[in-house]
Amino acid sequence: MSEENKRKLVIDEQEYNYEDLKQEQQILMDHIENCRRQKAQLAFQLDREGVAESAFSKMLEDSFNDDQKDQEEKEDA
Picture 1 (cartoon, one colour):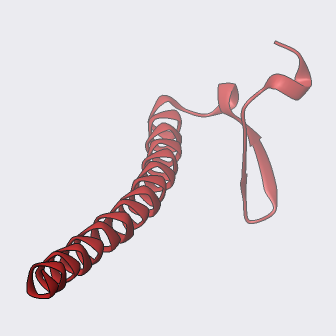
Picture 2 (cartoon, one colour; picture 1 turned 180 degrees about the vertical axis):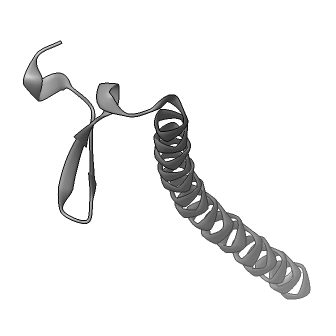
């Protein structure tokens, strides 16, 4: 693996190569990276759900407005 493709870890301004870590340290690093990926995925999902919630709220609001218009048309007829 080329030098630029090696996984690196920086702790207290000291850089470490993943391959040079003990097995336990590699596992801990894997857990940290996985947590970061999961946090990013959850943030993405929260953004998406927020947009969906807004769209559904708008649809509900529009349906009440449509009901009101229908009622007004019946009264005018």
